Image 1 (cartoon, rainbow, N blue to C red):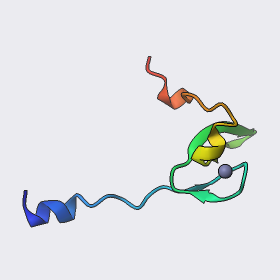
Image 2 (image 1 turned 180 degrees about the horizontal axis):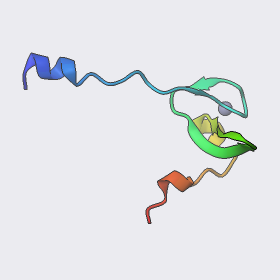
Image 3 (image 1 turned 90 degrees about the horizontal axis):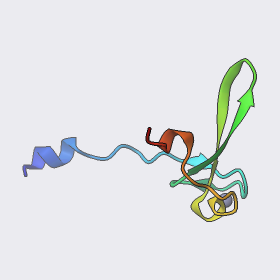
Image 4 (image 1 turned 90 degrees about the vertical axis):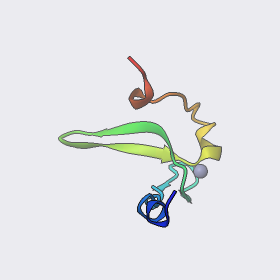
Length: 66
Ligand SMILES: [Zn+2]
């Protein structure tokens, strides 16, 4: 492995989202629901890993393998 290879494969900035339960920002958001907003795009709701358990988070539609 070369030095350049390491530099070019640097990870992207982590995706963060605010937890809908406690309001804290988490770097490991779990999708717990989708809020339909009529004519505009649906708003995806996230929770932190700890609170995601309260929502009984399981596989989201995006995770389902067909
Ligand atoms: Zn939370």
